Image (cartoon, rainbow, N blue to C red; front, side, top):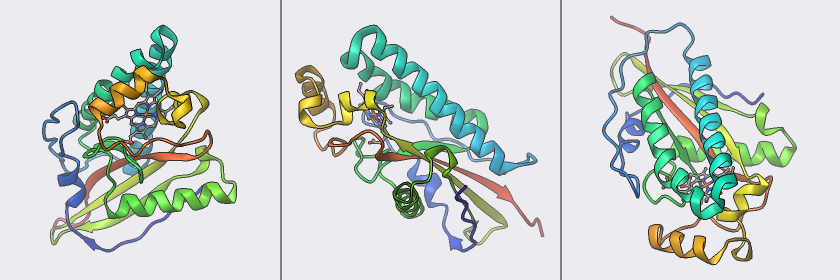
Length: 211
Ligand code: HEC
């Protein structure tokens, strides 16, 4: 298990950046309420797992039903919609980021997310299993009495992902045409199974001192 816990000053940057526009959808702002539960880290972990499971299941089904062209809708519309729904339900921000993003707004990592992606690369290079890798950090949020709890989990390339994120010869002309149209600045190609594709990132605010 790769856990990093540190404390430093920061601004509520993540929350603001998470309100960006998706290429396909306008995301409504999410209210980040103070956390009132018992175990925020475990809940972040569960939210991340739920998102990966739901998205993975839908992608798998769509690929089986009608191949990658059909599955594109899952990625362009369902992925941001699932992230938005879980964010609202759990009062957190959750999304997917990458050092070579396809989505030019939602997919771009901020500072802590870039750090998490780098640590994930190192952990995978050392031979750690993706399921055992995670990033956790708690930082003071601005000058108030709140902490931002940041959690991230690696997203690793599977064989079926190459239909849309692999080498040019692995991507069909129809999918290429659609990707060019929707994402003219697409960087998310050229990946091999087993490589780090990105990270699922979760932010939540927790009160720590009410004086
Ligand atoms: C049918 C095509 C398709 C397949 C198959 C596919 N993706 Fe994607 N992927 C996309 C599209 C389109 C986006 C951009 C979605 C958006 O606008 O938010 C994307 C975005 C992502 C992102 C968000 C970061 C970014 O680049 O913007 C990650 C992470 C990701 N995909 C991982 C995967 C993984 C892992 C698999 C295999 C399990 C996979 N994808 C399979 C089309 C696909």
